[in-house]
Image (tube, rainbow, N blue to C red; front, side):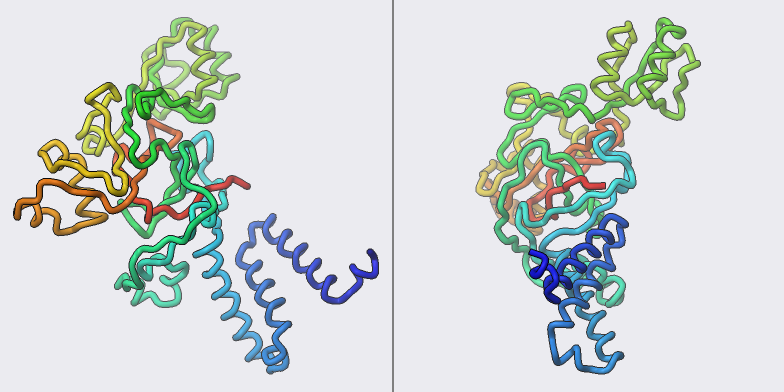
Length: 354
């Protein structure tokens, strides 16, 4: 055993793995690629025998290419940019985006390539087209309740993370923040939270409980105000305050012009929304056009309006779509705002590790 460990190659491998582990813990991700590139180049006699400047230049180039390749096709680190996933993920938390789970996608344009804005800024601003959207097969499919990182439809250069509520072909509805999928109420994860308006009947009794529960008030709310206050509550906090006689009602601070407010669906028969599925055929009635036409134009067929004018009565979807929600339901910009997300926008499955 000891003789095996003392072999130069084994010693080098152990040292490299330990060093990469330390750098990962210290969140010095870029240095991991430098270490990996240096170790790789030591095994190439042609490069190892060059002078120091050639070796250094080649080392940096190999590290950059290796880092881009890993981020495109294997995994990358994503920092939570907002409070929309509280309390499951807090602002500043880091997750690993596993791109092998659903299958890595090839970059469609230059803005999809990591650090292209640094190395080729002019071409980056021109958003150079590289090819059509294509995804390799993954070892799993997107499931309900998965935490998924995807391109923002509001700005494709930005990536956001949400929880998957509905899959292609599902019918969905929302009633007071409660989600219904295919007619069944979806259990809310314990870490999700909502914004409630609270009236405190017994301030002295409730105030200590509020402090113990760590209830967070909005800027307009306060524990000392006898009038109605707005607070963020998760399932446990809601149960505790309700049992003490607090009067609660859900508050949604979504923008006035949102996808969901324009198309109100309560989940009951005849009032649910069907998530588009590849091959799903719809009649292009006025009601269907109001719901789906913008997505068809944006993600599939830009000239669909001209086709309708020429007499097109039906349309079959070419892609699968998903519906996502943030766990901080009252303070999340998600599919209620921007609607369905096509499968080629999905980057990978999020795994929390820091």
